[in-house]
Amino acid sequence: MRQGFCTAIVVVTFLSTAAFAQKDSVSAGLALTPPMGFNTWNKFGCNVSDELVRSMADAMVKSGMKDAGYEYIVIDDCWQVSRDEKGNIVADAKRFPAGIKAVADYVHSLGLKFGIYSDAGLKTCEGRPGGLGHEFQDGLRYAAWGVDYLKYDWCNTTTQEAQASYALIREALDASGRPIVLSICEWGKAKPWLWGRKVGGNLWRTTEDITDKWNDKVKWPDGSCCAFGVLGILDQQVGLESYAGPGHWNDPDMLEVGNGGMSATEYRSHFSLWAILAAPLMAGNDLRDMTSETRDILTNREVIGVDQDAMGREGERVWKAGDLEIWAKQQRDGSRAVVLLNRANTEQQIVLKWEQIGYPSHIPATLRDLWAHRELGKFVGEFATPVAPHGVVMVTVRP
Ligand code: GLA
Image (cartoon, rainbow, N blue to C red; front, top):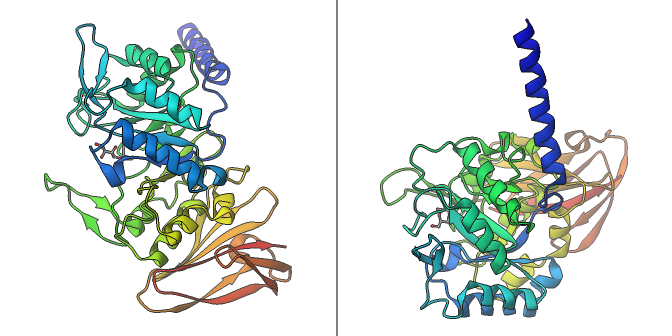
């Protein structure tokens, strides 16, 4: 009995200390809306360099993406080659002759933020040195370089436990004294939505990697399953919506918009769905060389506004019938953002009913089309529209 009482006190003390530590930590208050930026991986893979990163930062400003809200420039895998005799991580001197800090300084000089990638295991997915055993040392180094965002992967992790590994890197980053967004890239294997927030993760991947396809699965080189197209990733988000909120987001992986594997209609659907999911919007295409169509998708402020709505609600699938779906997201002003999705290969009619989005059917509401950028007028109870094959109609509904 007495022992039970003592244990209870210890547990309560531990829990309240942990909560207190997080609230007061240097990283509290980061990513209050889903992070937006650019990451090198989807388009460039291991082909990263000083020049690439600087030119992408320039392009983010020139293309209007910075003005539309994009902020982080993130170097993914392959910037690192070894550790020195003291265990310090060493950047590839051929690709980054001026070092990483010089690149970070340049990114900062444009009013942008700088991110980098490492891995919780012995090696990154591309076989570069991982962070295991060097967490505090790396945290200090990243902070000295001016890193604002760390994507931390899960390859080559031997017997580690995911939650403890990510708690450790958060502790190490905070110990540096620099606020650094922590992007947990564990692919959803250990259900990071259940513990990601508790360990100070700001976003966590919910799935394996995205691939630049509408609805295909692509096996990994070792034969295991799979990178997923947009619809495959989307299906794995159902039911996760309650875990997201300001400072802690489900991450259905980075954007493929503009990479060439999908049609413009499909890319508009991809972007609309990521916005309704309150997903991080990390562009993964070549920002220096965008068609105006790609730029218009990535900088659609009305759609971005849905993603970035300050209430921080993740949208959810409220209706499905075969290939037709309705996804809805509550916004701070009481309105709903709605995506009507047609997965079929032919045009289909979709009817949105007010009860599906939590409004009584007798209420008149004003609809606005976020891709056509026009008011559609007042409707009572329902709204019916044709939707293109693989397309969406995205609207706001304001009673
Ligand atoms: C994993 C991640 C990707 C990317 C690569 C880099 O596959 O899920 O997003 O970071 O590693 O090697």
